[in-house]
Image (cartoon, rainbow, N blue to C red; front, top):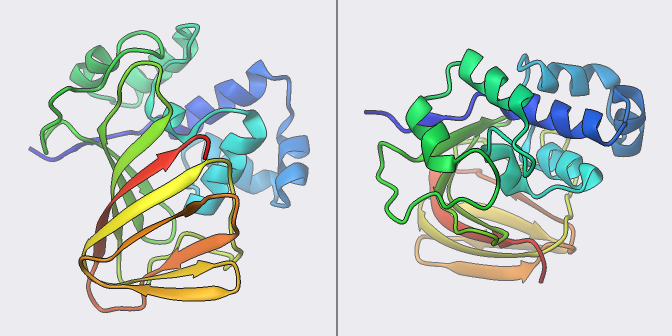
Length: 215
């Protein structure tokens, strides 16, 4: 069995935007992107890059981990229905529960991991989640040529990052410094520091990442 995909990211972002009374145009203007891009992401016609996803969630005041959940803290039925309609496995919905605060685990097998395939050749696999915590526990893969920002902009967001590279090579631009990560290397830094990842190699770069909401 393949890991369970998360097909409702766009719907989740749309519900959060509408809940806050923010228009597509005003959100796009705040992020410095086109309204068309926001619409395409919300309708599932396009996937956000890592940097765009962080920018959207930061602007909406939600954590990145929230996009894995088909429903919000209030048990939003619109998101649940959209997720089921998009083909989200009912076992995943059951595991996540009807609201934020339920655990995803304690055991998460390779078959039950949730997968986000983002723009620019990046894949996130959710490895677990404990109630009332704000930590992204992820297996991250950067395909050859993959990058966290399709526009080559450096990103920044609240929190801190801890990463361990298992295979391949990954280049981290951190502020004005460029760091090449090889298998066995680990990094940690405050995510408010402008940064970007890219894979210049010929094989996928795979690692385990923890991203906390606050440093």
